[in-house]
Amino acid sequence: MIKTYEIIVHGHVQGVGFRYTTKQLADKLGIYGSVKNLNDGTVYIVASGDSLILQKFISSIKVPKSPFAKVTSMDIKEIDSANYSEFKVVY
Image (cartoon, rainbow, N blue to C red; front, side, top):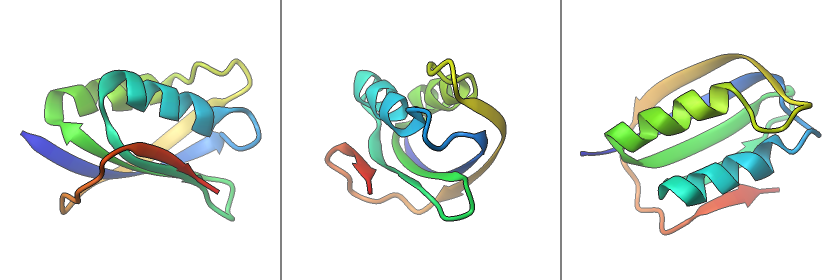
């Protein structure tokens, strides 16, 4: 079943390669959507894909691949599905 989540990531997640590694993970898992920095220091992700794969994606971003990033918490909410054809970094 395809689901779409809005995820706000808190912690030390800007200026440390977090968006880039999130995109790499999404591409590897076949997740579509986007990732962008917000003015308050958080990172905003919209992720759409198979519900089981999305759970793996969410678990993986809780423990970032970047050695400089640290996730302290995430706000996750399911939203209406949208048609994405790729996962992109929004600047």
